[in-house]
Each structure stands twice: as structure tokens, then as C-alpha cells.
Amino acid sequence: MKKNSLVSKLLMTFTLIIATCLVVIAIVLSVWFENYHFNQRKQQLDLQAALISKERINVYNGNSQLEDLSSVANYVSLSIGADIVVTDYRGVAISSSESKQSLLRTQIIDSKNVEDLKSGKSIEDRNGKNRAFGDSQYVYYKPIMYGDTFIGSIVMTTPLEQIKGQLKQVYTIIWVSILVALVISSIIIYYVCDRLLIIPLAKINTAAKRLAKGDIENRVYIRSKDEIGELADSFNTMAESLEEVEKNRREFISNVSHELRSPITSIKGFIAGILDGIIPLEKEKYYLGIAYEEIQRLTRLINDLLDLSAMEAGKLKLNVSEININEIIRHCTISLEQKIKEKRLKVDVVLEGQNLYVAGDRDRLIQVVNNLIDNAIKYCNENGNVKISTRSKGNKALISVYNDGATLTEKEKTYIWDRFYKSDKSRTNKVSTGLGLPIVRHILSLHGEDIWVENKTGDKGVIFTFSLKKV
Image (cartoon, rainbow, N blue to C red; front, side):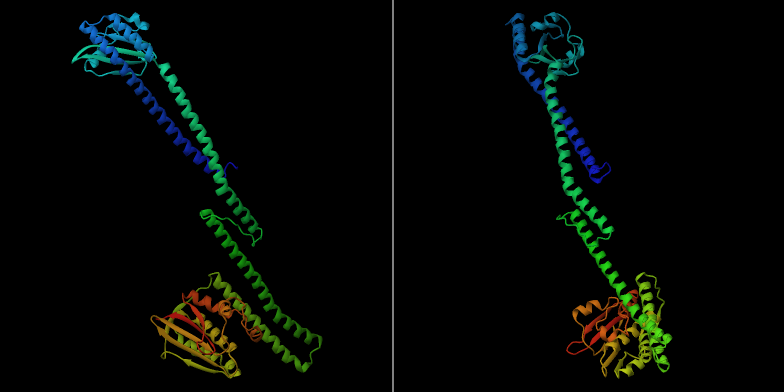
């Protein structure tokens, strides 16, 4: 695992968080158990102190002797593992267990503690410092009350080492458990991260590197419903898009090569024939005319490619103004009159009113209308019909161009907007570049408008309709 890898950072972060939580839990448990242990000790001392208090009251009433009190204190001392001293109301030792006989008749409770004990409250000293009993002692003071009268107290001392020795075992268990839990959680986190993050991300990383080297068919297969699965799906979608782009690029290069090669080959052949004297002198003008037509075809192709590239790159700027779309339709129809006459077509122009003003770039909309009418002429049979119409719908002007040629299949409806696509290559190979409709769609998209195609219902023919914003 790399030092700066995502998993190592996650592992360190989660381990630190878990370690912090476990340490806090361990501290809380340690403090709680220590308090619990001392409270249990206190309850035990209170219980045993009741026996001594009873005997001290008997002594106070003259029903018993101090020797009897010492015997009870010694018995209790052995049973609870604590040294015991019984004092009078002044804090002077009057009886004790055998281990504390040396303290008899000495002041072992200071005046401040005596005053506190007179109120009937017990005193607990965990600090382990007492001038009478020395350091490192747990001292517990229990008052002896006869009715409301304070007649003495019981002082019980236990070495802190004895108490903390029991606590150390618990502390050891707690901290060892915390350490084991931390190690186990770190191992679990690592393997979970390895399964959920490292392996999937490694697959995606490897696939990305292979994709960068040109392996566009490579895919990542990760069955996961989380963000990693979404990332893999997004990667596969990107790879499919790149594969489609690469496919289109190859098709584009192939189409451009074909479209350029054909006229260049014709021009080269005719010129070579003239230079070599193969073509008779009286035929030179005819073949030069064909070469000129091929040059015009090349010019149209190059201009269309430049326009399309500029549009796709977003470099084409529109000069939007108020224009009369009816006038443009009349102008374009007249400019194509020669082609219409050659195919003996019947053209019906139905316009809404004399003028229909829209917002758009005049030159580009002329290009749109000209391409659509020219396209209708190409795909219309001889003696066929072409209809051009305009109408309003809300704040939009709808312009339709109809020809009664063959209808389009669903596949053709999808691909006619692709570059170099020709639905009937045998009829249009010499007169069409296959870029007209893609250019039309891009121009209208730049205007924020749309174009769509439909087969005429219940009759033959195809209708192209596009929208423009009315002024």
C-alpha cells in the first residue's frame, strides 16, 4: 500500500478516529470503574462499621469494656482487610485493631474533620495522605452517633496499593481490549477498503491507462450500486462515447478521402488525357467543362467542410437582424429555377401574407432555405412536385419544404443529419456532398431553433420543417 494512496489516507483517518473513540471509552470506563470500586469499598466499610458503632455505644452506656471494642475492631479488620481505630468525640484514639495499638490515646483526627463528623456525615480521603497513618492510604471516617449526640468515630485505613492493585488488573483488561479492538478494526477497515475501493479503483485506473493508449474497446466491469459503480458506469459511457467519436472520425476521414479522391481523379485523368494528346482536340472543351464541374464540386465540399467545422467549434458568429423570410424563399426558388426546369418539376409556393418577419442571420438563413429546396429537387422524381410554405404558430414562424419523392425509413431519419450521409448515393453522388442537412441543423441550432423531418401521412413524399422566432 502506497504511503500517499487514498486507501492509506482513509485507513489512517479511520484508525485515528476509532483510536480516539476507543481511548475516550477506555478513560471513561477506567474512571467509572474506579469510582464504582471505591463506592463498593465504602459500602463494605459502612456495613462493617455498623458492628463497631453498636459495640462503641455499649461501651458508652457502660454495657461493655474497651477490650470488647478492640476485639470487635480486630475481627472486622481481619474480615475487610483494613486497619481500624475508634476515637472519642475529640478525635483521640480509644480503641483499635492490633495493627494500630500504637495510636491509642493520640489525636488522630484534626479539629476540622471532627467538626464535619459531628454533623453525622462520613468523610472519605482518597488522596492517601494522613499524618497519623502515613502516605498512600485510603482513609474512611465514619461518625458514631448516639441519638443526636456525637460520641466518637471509626477510622478505617486501607493501603492504596492494595486497592489500586485490584484496579490495575481491570485497567490492564480495558486497555488491552482497546488495543486489540483497534488492531482488529484497522485490519477490517483495510480489507473493506481493499475490496470496496482499492481493487475497483485499480481496475478503473488500469482501464483509463489502456484507453489513453488507444484501447477504446476496453471496459470496466464492477457490480456495485454505490458511487464506485456509478464511476465505472460513467467510465464505460465515456469509453463508448470515445469509441463512437473514433468511429465517426475514421468514417469522416474515409468519406472526405473518397469525396476528394473522386473529383481529383477525374480532373487528373482529363488533364492528363489532354496533355498526352489522347483526347481529340475537338473534345478538349467538353472534357475541360467536366473538369471545371469537378473543381466546383471540390469547392462546394471544402466550403461546406469549413462552415461545418466553424459551427462545431463555435467560431461562427451570427449577424441577427429582422428579415423577411418570405422574400428569402422567393429569392432562393428563383435562383434554383434552372434545376427545377431540368427535372420539369411543379413547384408550389404558399406563403402566409406578403411579408413574414423573423429574427435571424440573413446569409445563413438563405443557406438553410437554399439547401432544403435544393435537397427537395435532388430527391424528387422528374415531373414531380415540390411545395414550399410558411405559417405562423404562436410566436414562431414554421417553414416547410415538401417533395413527393420516396419516403424515409426510420433509420434514414436518424442518419440524414450525419455528415456525408446520402440516402440514395447512386442518384446524388455527383451533385451532393452529404453535408447540406448537417449544416442546416447547425445553423438553426445557433439560432436556438429546431428542424424535423416527417413522411407525409397517407401519401408519398417527405416534409422538412423548421422554426424561426417571429418579430
